[in-house]
Image (tube, rainbow, N blue to C red; front, side):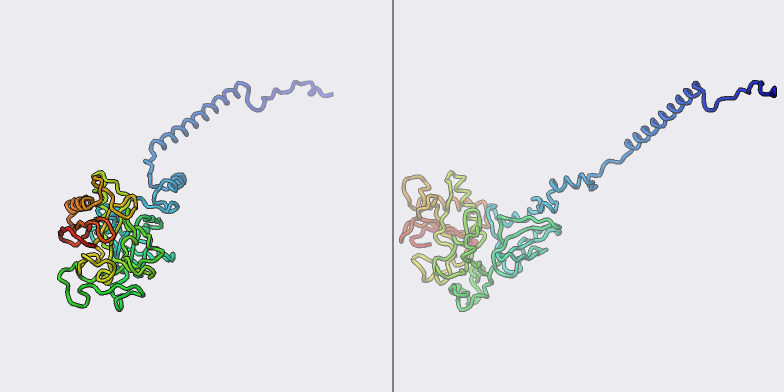
Length: 376
């Protein structure tokens, strides 16, 4: 046996770290990781503090979702707020109660002083459902009663309390009638220029059908309230109404109510009269040959809240007489004082010929006052 086998082996150093070195390494690594985390947190905080102010118009997903429910111009809501629609206020008159705009074919709804915003357009819907769009708010060419809506971009706002009525041109009258409906001849038709513009031939007529006769023209009145009381079975009928007259009647109602007279129903005893009816229809006593009724700007009225067909006791004296008609006349006087553009005639009439007392009101353009004895 070799003696080399009995020599001690050389001491070898163990591989890896000693427990003490391992503890030092772990401590150093933990410190480095902590420093890295702190550095990352400081960087994030710095970026947060340096961020720009949020842009409220930037369409984030959350904001876009919220806008579907809160934005009045969102296409899903199909709604326009009231601000762009202020120009329609002029169509409602001084009373704010008008519910129709009467226009000849191709006329614009608004005046040059009250133009709609350029981004707005009008949508007209005929009774048939057919729709036309006008960017300049021009009335439809075909006569009829139209629903109105205002559009901006793809949003639509129906104007439920306002109708646009395109008139049938006066030239459609042939042989004193349109279709089967007799109108007659106006006082200066074919006789040269009238003495005043107020006596010129009408521009056109409202075509009234069985279907549209209940169309409101204002808060208290409908188309059928102003129809001539003849040719009962003939349809369509043709009607003249001056918007200023409707406005004046609504203002008279407001004056009466402000004075303490509740007004639920105003009866139009006589509104528009065709020339043929004015001259020969019904009781012609007291009718003027140039009656404003033929021009659609006059009405004989009385307050009839109980709808018994006669004037109510407005002054509370226990009698139905011309004194009650005077209450309406004084209200009309106050309206003209506040709104000179609505000046016209006011007549007081007693009971006669199967009817009670009433008040004549018109907007002829100049002041006239009288007491009558006949039909107004």
